[in-house]
Length: 234
Image (cartoon, rainbow, N blue to C red; front, side, top):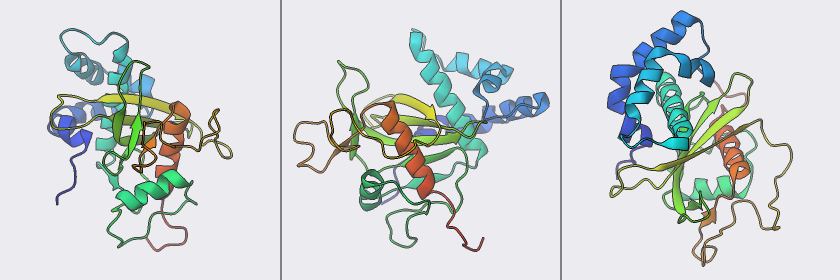
């Protein structure tokens, strides 16, 4: 079975080849760090493309999410579009504990992680295993995966992509950013991180993402899985 297409492949792949080189050239001419979102968003080619991507009815406060998606898509393209694909076992392990800075074992068929941890990779989780409710009145949506990119200060920006399926023209996104969480995070209600908040979800083996802190933690865990193995030959 072929791998699921990523959100980048669904939305940006053809567009990127046509429009992203101009952004790259503009950032280089300005001496700007492409990871700097403010610098990215004042680039003329990026601003023009962002305006073109806005729907006719506008997006209101959603312009921040659209800008975040475009920036992550650009960094993903600039890094060579690396994808960390995690099967059911690797996804369960990622949600159960924080990795110790090594990638999943090669040859298991459960992950085809790149050997390096580039800024701009996409971590695609097992389908319909992790869910989130992005707004109080909204239904729970499955997380397809997340874009993970470094900021200039060494923090991570993690953009979760939710509700990707063939019958829907778009998807939902949410972003979290920050340094690696110190120590073990705990939910205020005492339930474990990523424990299901869906009725019957625990029995079905499902998990939930509860807030920005957990999304950021997920991004750091994915980065650790996607990191080089210490001492490994290059």
